[in-house]
Image (cartoon, rainbow, N blue to C red; front, side):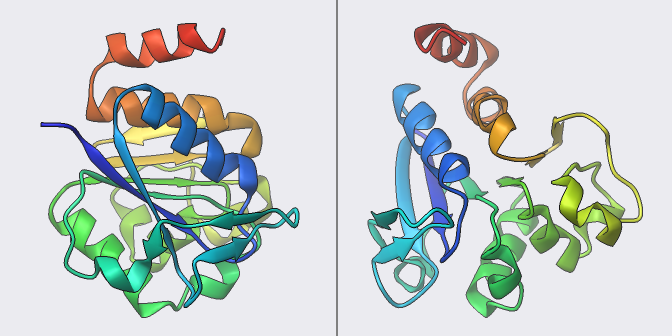
Length: 179
């Protein structure tokens, strides 16, 4: 059975941190669904690129996926109190399903208290909110994957592929894009 991933698109998301996982996970044979956290399918990124999500997050209230991926960007600060985003994070964590956050998105894990149990990394601009962090650019700790930012989007995506599938598939995906 194919793995399925839900990637959240929030207003002011970082484009590279969303599009890179969408692309690489699909190359690896993973089914990717994108969901807007707002009430519109069209989501405007930090850089002014409008991307149309497959659906609204509210359409996925009872859907089951193998992983939840949340790109960063300044929009993270606007969704920290988004009740459905918080609920999804709790559901994935309680089921021990993969939660992958990049850049400022690990703040959403911090808000759930997950930083107390799991080693994480994040963008330097939000480091001061965490009591302790791992210095690596991408960190996998059990079912939690975090990464520093746009420049780490490829290793972040490959870590998700390795977690959901296997190391060989992650390596063949990396090879296919000359990484």
